[in-house]
Amino acid sequence: MLKSVRLERFKSKKMIPLFLLRAEHPISRKNIDEEALKVLYRLHRHGFLSYLVGGSVRDLLLGRIPKDFDVATNAHPHEISTLFRNSRIIGRRFRLVQVFFKGGKIIEVSTFRSRSEFEEVETEEGEVVRKESFGTPEEDALRRDIAINGLFYNIADFSIVDYVGGISDLKKKVIRTIGDPDERFQQDPVRMIRVIRHAARTGFSIEEQTYQALLRHRDEIRKCSPSRLRDEFLRELKEGVAKPSLHLMLQTGLLLSLFPEFERALGNRSLTREKSQEFFLSLFDLADQLIKIGRSISESILLALFLTPFLQAVTPQHPFLGKREKYLYMTQTIRWAAHEILSPFSFPRGSKEMACQILIAQANLKKLTQMGMIPKKLRMKKYFKEAVLLFGIEAQARREKVPRILQNAVPFQFLPWWPKESKRRHRRFRWRSVPKKGT
Image (tube, rainbow, N blue to C red; front, side, top):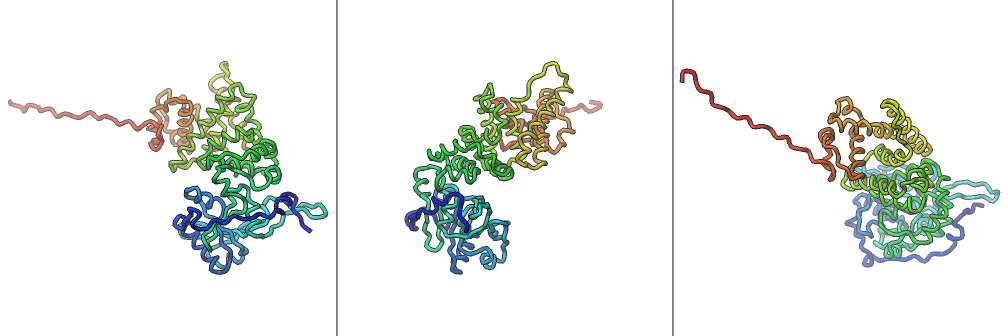
């Protein structure tokens, strides 16, 4: 007989759900994606429970526009697939259905589950197995990470269903795990990253019990699979809230638990800890500004920004080395740092190599801007534009002016701190009257 290793005690408690009728909440169907409504209504018309779930409900209650609209139902994946011809079933352990619409839009539909994807199940013989099991809406809400993400919107009567106290947390503006945070973080340490990310997104504070549990279990983060840690960490950097996320990760020590090598740059082993942390956060503050105005930043740039403070901490000055020796030493240091820090987390090889090229190019750009020239050979490199962008971000973080010569090489007029393109003044040619011959 199967039994849950953890959360058994928590799930045995019967929760009294809170129902908010249509007049008691601000969510309107006008604010819900048209394709998501089509999916919700079709499931409802065929007799299934049909809920809008997760972050989309949270964002709608906060008056924000959700990026994605996810649907949950009591229909099994093959039943959902039968209702929607333009769909496919994905996932091995926990299957869900992707419904495709014109323009490349995808609505993901999942079946209510009784346990998390990463929750372990143990047999009486002590063997740990993992098995998919469908469940009720209440069980589906209890398996989720954070209370404000456990809210459901019922398309049948337009009500909000709250099994986990998410409405109360929204009013208090706090981030709280569902259930005992010690058990939740031990079960899946990646939840600590998610708690920090949602606190950064919403600007909410982390509930005290959850915060103290995070401090106690932060070193367990390395127990998770490298690919999961990589994906969750990149989400921290890509969503336009990298600065507040990294600030919380430094404050709780989770960043140094995840990347112990950064102790030399941002931890107690650094002689300029506060100054280095301020510079580190300034880099990602500028990156967040670009993302918020709609400019995508490549993974390579983000990795190069992340490695910059570490490289400054581990690269000593050697006044007796020649130019060639300095260049080779710097190149080897950059490649060593990328391998030492990024390789354990299975970052794509192409992104790592491009990040190395961008970082190696910084010394060349500094030298060439002082000389007042940038050769065409360098401008033709694939990494040149991103190298110039990193150079500008780093200069702005140091409160230095971006060299004017770079504005002609790569004009980033969309950056508020980038030098405006200078207009060349053309000399006006004046015609002079020439006296005719014989006059």
